Length: 197
Image 1: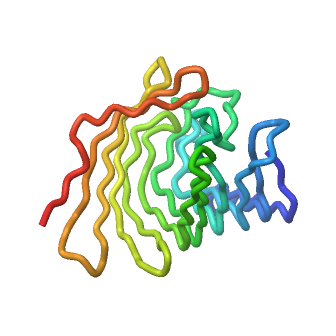
Image 2: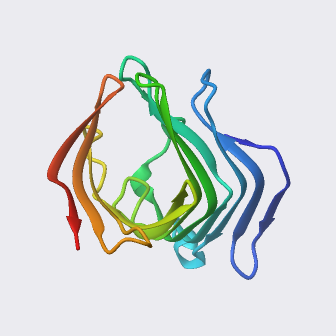
């Protein structure tokens, strides 16, 4: 984890941390997550009791590249964190002006998501997560809803994802169970993606 810009920390009226120019990723890998700014406002009462409860978190301009390598290995720039994920909750999470590049090296294809937005909450960093937002693909806006279960002991997670194109009278929904075995992701569809008129 690296901060390349200014750091502003305040205790009053609420403990707040503002980081400009943040980046993080796995050591010795080229892919990183970068963002213009990260603002974290802590819940004072919980902090006094020794609990890490974030009342409001805002991530501005995040950029990441992720996908599958030529052998099917998952390429994901988020490192393993060295603390208890269950010990940190985020009451309100806002992601603004994001960009994500999804790459499939085997087919040499990529998908660019621009103007990515998300508003939601995380009961803990291990989940569950619930929220909604939108993203652009080739100039077309796609609102979406996302909810996940808690990350299981084996690293698997259940995901429900629904996309509602703005110019089409339909919704695409899917329920997935995602796990990673030796760096290779496995997707099990509980309910196949379906169109809802």
